[in-house]
Length: 176
Image 1 (cartoon, helix red, strand yellow):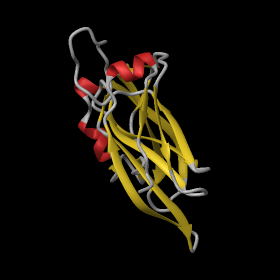
Image 2 (cartoon, one colour):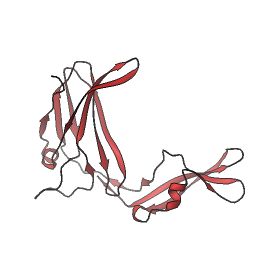
Image 3 (tube, one colour):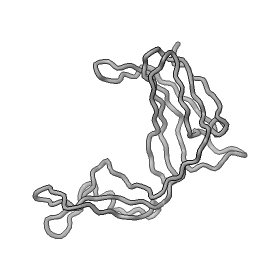
Image 4 (tube, one colour):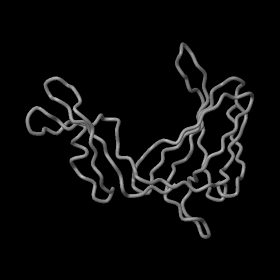
């Protein structure tokens, strides 16, 4: 995945006394010269009169363009308890320094399979030049107890660029 340096960042114009939203606007910018005012929008920026510019805390800048390359993906499979919930996740950093979590989940039928698109290794001779950096994948297994997901097992797996590009299989059993 490649993420462009240009983004938009929405904010609401809010009446400070009533809390009513008068409308939405946005900033346009680039990650290299990010505007300090953007972070201040989470707390609110006073305007003339009774209006405030404000953005909810969960909103982050949105890139204009994201390009995803098609890859075969590495196949991660293994044994897991029948009916258990299996998650695989990794922390990602894009070419613009934006962080997010890549996550998949499935219900095991004695085994599980995931196909993952990101390598966790560093560049080696002959490898492609990629813009996204992933940490080791964490595979977790658990069950629902009292309407809560309880994760009991965790293993880590590294995935090479070769594994991703050639569609190689890796085995990670979650059962003893």
